[in-house]
Length: 114
Length: 111
Image (cartoon, helix red, strand yellow):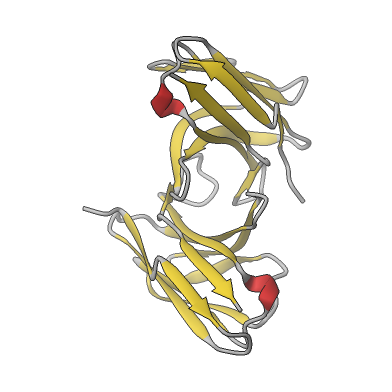
């Protein structure tokens, strides 16, 4: 049973296209996150949702739009893809926000924009 | 901005040796966590230490936290080739509602 699953695992697309990454967790966690890991392995938070409500939006270009249809799902839609968007995107979940629990990460989506 | 700075950036040791990685941070925290990332995989939570704790153990892992120096260390004892991975510290800041990750230490254990 995969706790946090992301699809697709790899995504290669041309500049200017629109793409989506899906994430689902079966842990019953209340909070979900999107993190971006760049080529130097730096991990930076992008968004956080708690019970379908957006609570963190970290100065991410508005070409990135998260959507949480229910607390088990957090999808990421990216419009007008740019070369600089190439990275690995990780979805994660945790039991509560700021309550001191570890995060469970998905295996990542490697996005390559050409 | 990155909250944590890890040191060293890379570490190469022989199987059976101990590996120590250090993390420094800048602001007050609720807790500090360590994660492992194998190549091409997601991050795996290893251990969490709260701001009122000084030391914690989990199997071959020992974590210390010094809030006066804003630093933490992760010790892996009797390392194995399977411990080869990147290790990240992450801080849960007061009122932050998110984990902020350091740059990571790449550990290579040679068999």
